[in-house]
Length: 289
Image (cartoon, rainbow, N blue to C red; front, side, top):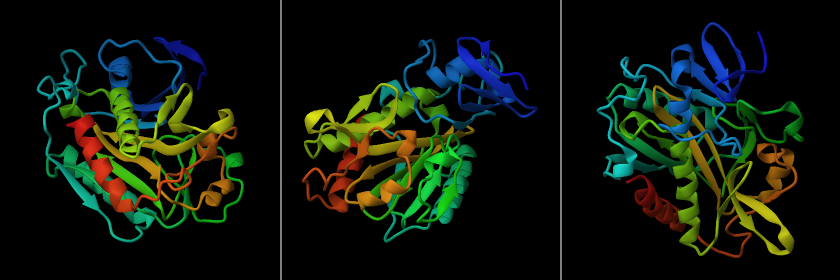
């Protein structure tokens, strides 16, 4: 395997007989010819200064053979048309392996045209998950079960008091812009926080949504990690409502050690999970249609 030579304007990491690995983005071999369109969306320039937790993207089978563009019959997300998106809220705590199995099955059904898009809100028991870029040294104390997962990103924590939103959308109907999809996930979280008068912000070179604190400190309040297969998304976002923040000390969250984590309750907002669910649904409609 040859390392670190250029393919277009992105560093080419290497390849095997099945996949091209491009700047942390996994594409099937047939998708390699149109990486700019898939990753950046149409003719937008590459964004070198942002890391969108894109390490696990598998795309194939829904590209026009004429121009290597997403199916021209697709509905463009910019039109903000109303889509038939199902919402589910799981009661209690959902075991992580069962959640992944469900997402994979539902994503396949969506890709095959047998199911509608879905946003699924859950809470998990205390666990750590390792994305495709996770480094062994970032697991400091395996006090909870650790699951390797196919989403992009590094280590993160899930547990009671954290709202996890699993987002299963059909991107071929929404313009085929993967990077635009992640920007919309960020905007969804920012608008959700705005419902509680919290200013969530993006930061250059850092994944997730951040809150400025006193003394120049910045804490992470929400995380993003996605996977895309056959143009259907799964995994998604997590928002700290009232988790035990000491549980994050067992990892280096998302590989970022110089900043902390926070939650709505830590910010002095005694909101309920139901309050957050209402805000998330309203903000989702604003962003995704």
